[in-house]
Length: 263
Image (cartoon, rainbow, N blue to C red):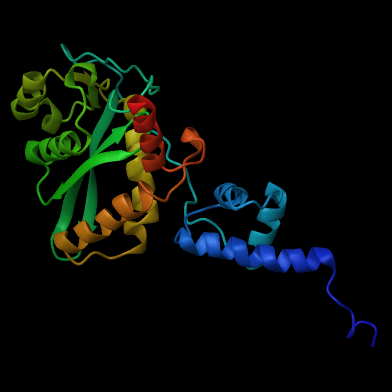
């Protein structure tokens, strides 16, 4: 009888409330956040449980991040291509936005149109995807349109901007090279077969594939465009917090920097 009439302890009552909060943050992130980021979100709202407690409650709730493996670069030949200088040299630190951009192309599979190609541009200061473009063809036009979109949105100072890419034919094409040269944008290149030179950009594409396309079957290019727009603009840039920028979102980071510059 004593067991049946026992009231929940203070700790048990707190755990019940904490479980609801943890589960809400987890579902709001579409199952993408692990214990560290959930804890950071709770702390923003004035709650300060320990990391171990959050981990225990997540285990009790049988929930975990869908990101099960971090991106690790694969290295092959490290020989520099003649005349293509690496201006970044794995230094991804920047003193403000629109100083260092990284760009790359990745594959996106659709049921009807088969392989499509997503070009993205990443800002090293804010971790924001400042521009992107997806097409059925992997060519210089895809790469260039992502760059042009970034410039249209961000309106950077061309003379102080470095754009870093790999040595793929899309980025070494005369179309891209002449466009960058005409605007005074410096072009930096990764060493051949050495993905560490473009690590944050490749890491973003790896996260996107784990967090989004892996969980959805796209019908065609248009379907993929809608989902990727929702992921990049609705989630990654404006809701996904990042440890490298102090557990705020890329858009928050950019907004703070723009206010500082305007002051």
